[in-house]
Length: 106
Image (tube, rainbow, N blue to C red; front, side, top):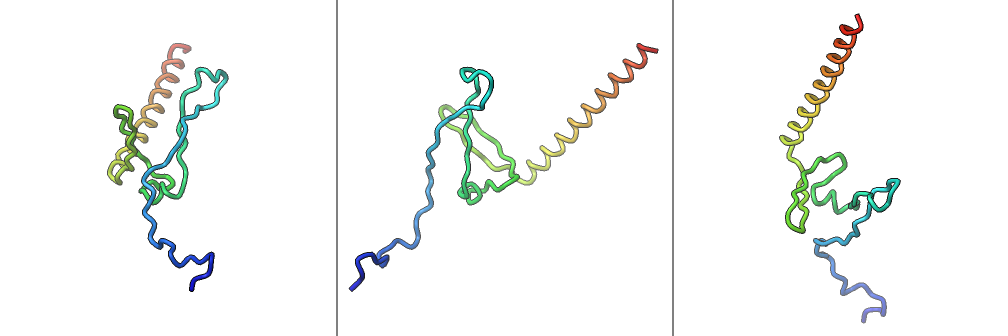
């Protein structure tokens, strides 16, 4: 006979939770009334769902629904390339402004 507090009938394979419940908060700013809404997700379940640290993702916005999609390696590479190009363009613009300023001052 099993003891009163026995775990004999305990479920071994629990089903993964497929729902989480959160409250939309806000990003602190000077004026709380105009602060933008924010959702902060955290937990080991994110890693299990394909969202590990450093992972980039795409948010699809639909009527009353947000869908989070982890970026593929190809998408991640393209985004990194794009960011490098944007950084280079910013450097070129800055240098052009400096050259124009030097030209006008001289």
